[in-house]
Amino acid sequence: MYIYAGEALARYGFGEGHPLGPDRFYAFWDAFQSSDLKTKVTIREPVQGQEVDALLFHTAEYVQRVRDLSDIGEGMLDSDTPVIPGIFKIALTVVGTVLDAVDQIMHGHTAQAFVPIAGLHHASRTASAGFCVFNDCGIAIEALRQRYAIKRILYVDIDAHHADGVFYAFENDPEMFFIDTHEDGRYLYPGTGATKETGKGEARGTKLNIPLPPGATDEIFFSNWSRMTAFMEQHQPEFVILQCGADSLAGDPITHLQFSSEVHFQTAKMIAKYANTYCCGRVLALGGGGYNHNNIANAWVASIRGLVTHQPDDSHN
Image (cartoon, rainbow, N blue to C red):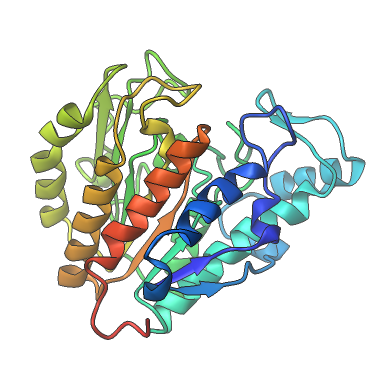
């Protein structure tokens, strides 16, 4: 398993005082370094992405807007996402790192990879949203399609917020399978992800949204387990992306779910076992949200622990 770590990745954030600051990476990294998992993984440096990579998913007009505002070094991309100097290059580092993980998996160097500062699932093709400049999840899906001819992709998201930027970009796509557990949109940003949203046209039934009430516990999450696993058995993909946002754990300052890290451990473990059965073990895990440092540490380390329990035998690690 590959884990991507380094200062270039940590720089994605919006300064002190913003919920998404550069210290999130180190909250995870310090905990991982003191865990027993170090011997089971290979550490890789972040990779600088290029404008052409963002264009896999985003419009040229939007990419140019980010570049222009980045050069100015101030202003707002949207009401939640301030501009900081150099944000264009910093955001492209997340993109480049995620795409390197895709490449390493598809070339057979590893079956699993984890990028902690990634999973920026709110940005649409034409705009930023919710602290997300470029949607690395959507970019990864497009890269798998356009660069590797991978058609059938499963995207699973256990972040507290609905992955609206991913969902609506692929709402009509019958070969992008989508499972998202999240706090009910009536109580939390971005207000989407209702149960009835299952995909459109030929894609109807290929998306599973599971909104949960504020205060939902592990017990409520796992009560939906059979729905999730049955959906996964029905749609057998060639590649799995797991967004394991830590903001669904109890004590996050901006959400209201009450999970423990057991949700992340068990979900990652289940995903890894499933991927071994259907898609050569190929799992790309992305850190996602989380604004409580202890929760970030616990959820992401638990996710890695769950993945490595079913690390394929032919992994190079």
